[in-house]
Each structure stands twice: as structure tokens, then as C-alpha cells.
Image 1: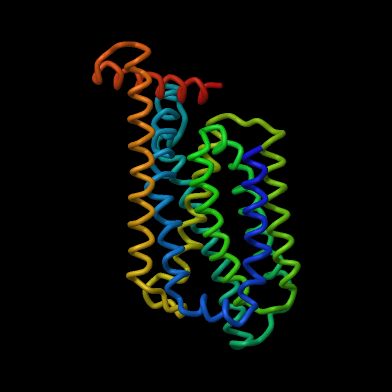
Image 2: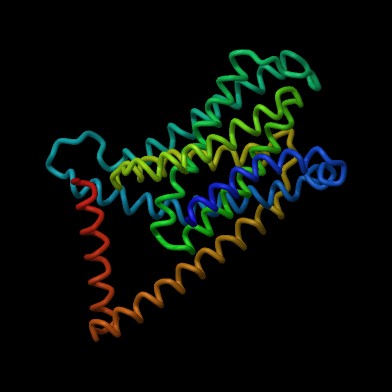
Length: 285
């Protein structure tokens, strides 16, 4: 049930985010730029502190499980997927920016092939984020809460970027993306995939989050990114994630000490063996 509420929150972010931006006070709020930069910092911190370490653990398990099986580039596959996702979303943004430059700034975009290709890419991306809600829910309420918060902030960035492309079909964009999130959650609730598939989907998510978040922040960008708000958002959320992880580890170790009566070194060894065994079994399966 928690995943459903999280999906509704994310879908509502798409719907309400666009409406808030259309109001004068909210428009001025976002135009200051620092809030977009801080939100981008939060999103990027989540990728580097939470998603990529988890992706690395899955990559190691995959490489160990396929050792000797003749699988090509087993140690680089997950990261290659993240790179491919980054390149695809960069290509989509590049097409939109090129079309805008040809039409002239302030010109309303046509609902042409580029528009629908761009929207299809973001609809699939939003559906993927909704799909992964189920896996985050299985990891506990803290993981689900962190994921929901980061993706809601991330959707505000996406909504802000799409709103800059013009007001034509704005309701179509909002409802299409909101429906994609809910559709992804429904698919994730009904279709069970292996841990390997989840790892691959997270690799796609990592590449997508980085490029869409940094679209406003890269040096030379016309979006006037703000360094210090970006730095503060990244640092603050990274510290929050690390503190949450430390608290979870302390609680887990305390429970294991009570259950097994072993020392810290023994519990740590059992934990590593448990994580590696579970990952290897899921890869083989």
C-alpha cells in the first residue's frame, strides 16, 4: 500500500508542479534558479551515494555468478547501461534544443515527431521510476521514503524544463507523465522480475537522473545554474543518506548480536556472506 501512495505522490507532483509554475508567485520562485539547482543537487547526490553503490554490488554479484560462463563484458554491463541511458536522454534534449534554436526563442513548438519522441522518452522514464517503487518498498519504508522524496524533487525539475518548451499541450504533457508513473507502479505490482533486471533498470535510472538533473547546471548552460545551492543540496542530502544508512546498519548489527551472540567481526562476516549469497542466487535465477 505504501508503494501506491508513493506513486500517487509522484503523479501528483507532475500534475501540481506545472500548475504551481503557472502562478505568478511560484513562477518567480522557480525563476530564481537556486531552487532548481538545490533540487538537482539532491537528485545527483541520491544517484552517487545510494544508486551507484547498490549498482556496484549487483555488478559484482553478476560478474561472480557468470564467471567462467563466457559472458562478454560481464564486469562493465551495468555501467554501460547507465552510460547508454545518459546518452539517450542527452540526445533527446539535444533534438529539442536544436529545434528550438531553428524556430527561434519564444516560439511555441509544434506537436511534431520530435515532440512525440521527446514525450515518449520521458513517459518511459517516468514509468520506470514508478515501476521501481515496488522494489524500494520491499527494502523498507526508509528506502521508499528517500526514493519518493528524491523522485518528487526530480519530477519538479523535469516539469520545469518541459514548461520552458512552451504552453502548447501542457495538460497533455502533465497527464501523460502522471499516468506513466501510475502505469509503471501497476506493472511493477503485477510483474515480478529478477534482481538482475532490477539492477539493469536502476542503471538506466542512474544515467537518466544525472543528465536530466544537470541539464540546468553544466557550465556554459543558458539556464543559469547556481553552484552553491547545488552544492548545499547535494551535501545535505548525501549526509542525510549516510546517516540513515549508518542508523540502519547499527540497528541491524544490534539485532544480529542479540540473535547470534557473536562479535562485530563475526556479524560483519555473516552480513557479507548473506548479501553476496542472495545476490548470486538472484543472478543465477
